Length: 301
Image (cartoon, rainbow, N blue to C red; front, side, top):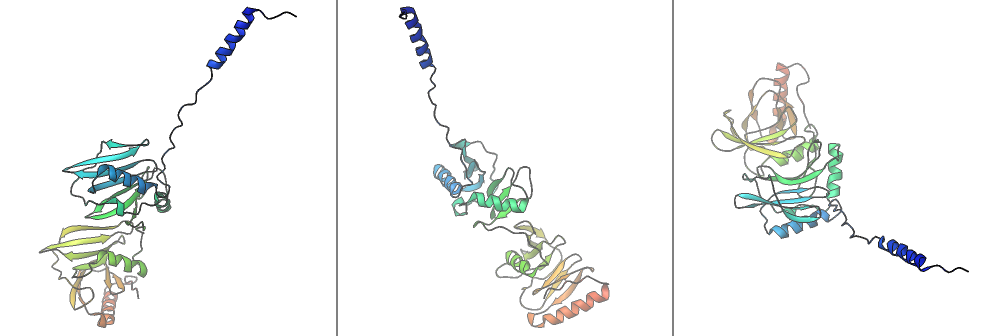
C-alpha cells in the first residue's frame, strides 16, 4: 500500500490549522434593556438618581419605559441627572426655574409605573410614546402627569397614585367632591358657581378689589388665579347667615345641595340660612318662571 508523502501530510496539517483559526470567540453579552414599567423599577431608579444628586430641591421628574430624569435647582440654575442607555450621568436640560414649587419625588407613588401608564391609556385612548412627569401644575399644586406622543389629552394623578378623574357637575356625588376641592376649609367666599363648560369655581376674597379664582375643570386639576373683581359682591359664608349672592347669565347657582342655571340678566338675590332654604328655592323658581319660558332651572335634591 502506498504511504502518504511528506508533502500531503504538511498540506493536511495546514488545513487543520486554518480551520482552528476560524473559531469565533464569544463576545460580551449585551446588558438587558431597562424597563421602568416593571413594579418597583421606577421608584428604584429615582432613588438612585436622588442619591447621586444629593439634593431634594427637585423641580421636575421625567420617566419613560427606558429613561429617567431628575432635575434639581442649584442656586438659580437647574441641573439634570438622567439614566439613559444603561448609564447614569449629568445631561443638558431645557428645564428652567421660575419659582415653581419644589418637592421630594420619593413621596410620590412610583411603585408601579406600568400600572400608571395602563390607567392613563384607558383615559387618553393611547399608549404611544407615554411619559410621566412630576411638576408643579399650578400655584404649588404638584401632580403626576402622563402624556403621549403624538399628543392626546394629559392624564393627572395625585401623589398617592389616585387618578384625577373627570367629573360631571350635574351629578350630585361628583359635585360634592369637586366642591371640597375648590372651597376653603374655613372662611368666606365671594361667589360659587359652575361655568358653561362644567367647571366648578369659587372666588375667595383676596384684598380690596381682588379675588382668588379657584377652579376645577372637568378634565384638569384645581387651578387658581388672582383676578380683579369690580362687582362689589360681599363675601359670605356658604353655610351660614343672610348675604347677597351675585349671579350672572350662564352661571349655575348652587345653594346647599341645589344648583340653578341662570339664564337672565345679572341680578342680586337674598341668600338665606339653611333653615329657610325652601323659601329661597320657591322665590327663585317663581322669579325665573316669570322671566323665562321653559327648561331654565336645574334643581338637584
